[in-house]
Image (cartoon, rainbow, N blue to C red; front, side):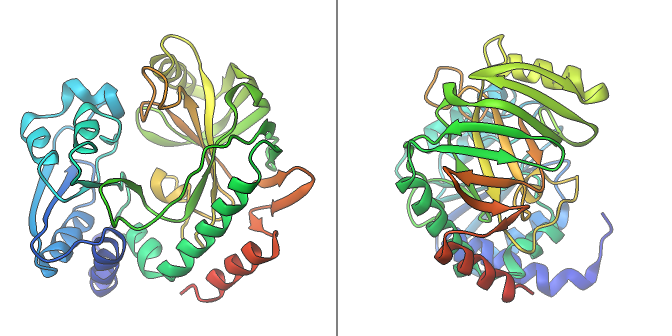
Length: 347
């Protein structure tokens, strides 16, 4: 990505929005930014400067080379200085990809009743601008609140996803209650712009076709993956040279087996773009769906160790009601209106 100095003011505003408005960093807090040798330097510097401008005590640590794997699989590769810092901060913004969410140090930090962690992954400077400086953050959270409210009241109902490439998968919606919110208290957080949809694992049946993947790295697929699912993932084909990588990633995440589909998502951020280079941004683009594969966090060996694949242009039904049509949120009325309002003020 080119070093475009004209992005300076926009990037600075985006970083302040991330650090202040989303991560709720205040004067005197201790902030850790972890990055790796693939992280765009402008993104790291902007976040450091934003935290410093708020009066925080800031440390930035760069891992080189990047971690080879994410989650608990990264445990043997995380340096001791990072481990020490991550357990002793108020806000931890993780720009590493693969990331440290789900690792042993992450789990310890989440139990210290202090640290607020953000899985920012591979977001770059331009992605930060689009996510945090090209749409109203309050409106982004409003859409999420309405969507999660719908999912909560629809627990146990039959759902279905389709895409133009041939995804057609149905499942029963779990009763897992989720939300996405600002980082006002200790815990783990995600960049806004997508909602998670959790199925009852054994109920998932059908075909899932994905156009990009994060297994050991993030890459677009010239030949999409084709997953056959009946409770568990039965087979995966396609992918060209990436087929062997997803096979070993699935088996690594599933204790030697392919495991389940553990989550779907619905991207709705009007400024996010499908770049093919940023997993974090791509899944938040309108109509995109990050499909998590492997074991859920509540099973041994689960958590953030799973690979993900992204499909685009999705439609989504809850029962007989179509909620998303070709990427656009169309129902219920209050959710559809909030999504339209978000798009109208975009830019």
